[in-house]
Length: 337
Image 1 (cartoon, helix red, strand yellow):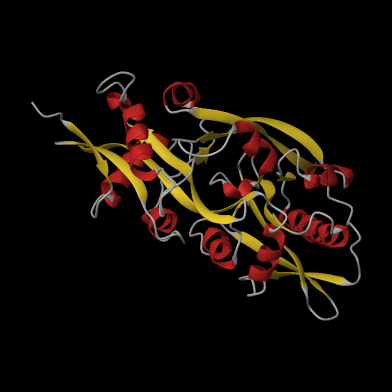
Image 2: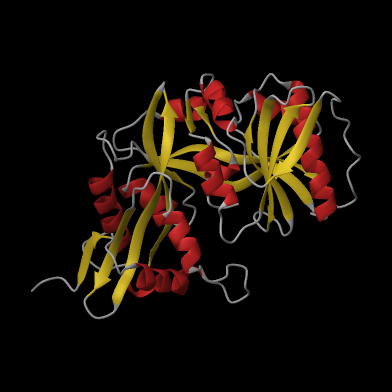
């Protein structure tokens, strides 16, 4: 007898039942996690700048989709090459189906099918997936080769009682923009030369991730020289309830680590925005070995440890120390903020 559940790739017509099943699992009664919209799903998976869809579903013959293992493909700059990685996202199996099939259950079967279909060194396949799998960490570590790369330690500064306005270099001006100008691509090309590995932060990615996000308001900032207008850095700010209610985040950051003036100018602009928004705290994140992690501390930011940690599943990629020491990332590389 054929199995009543088929594990297969996404196909046209799956979006609505997949979204309905997702909302059965993740939506909370207190409204903390509201229902996911179709606009969000389409933006996240169908409108991704790579043009690649990496979704595997478990479909019951009568009840429809009962689980999904999905990832968001990301263009990756690594060791001087353009490759692909993928962020695991929105993974779920309906509770009554989690033990279906051979041990250790349907979630692992979905994950193995996803890696088998989408991982590899060929064009269009990912070198590794990454994510923050706190609920499914143990089973994923044991059966799907998840490796713990680093704790997610945030940098933060309280805003509840107001921030003393930080002085900024007079030679620079930081302005909020609706979309980044074309020279952000040149900034990325210059900065990637100093990076061993990072998600490609070009204009196409930045606009998809922030300017075009359908259900989150991000503020985009450019730092330019007052005389001549040369672009020195960009950053992205947003407020949400991640970690704590009403928290502001420097979600993304692209600026030379040695450019103290541009760093100070952008921090000053974001702190003013955070004070106007009356958020409780302003937080950001860099890898602990990145010079910006220490630089922000020198500018008054404290370190806050969280239960979140970054993991990779790496069928064909690098060793753990490589990720830990060479990967430049911010909290905007996740879908959590």
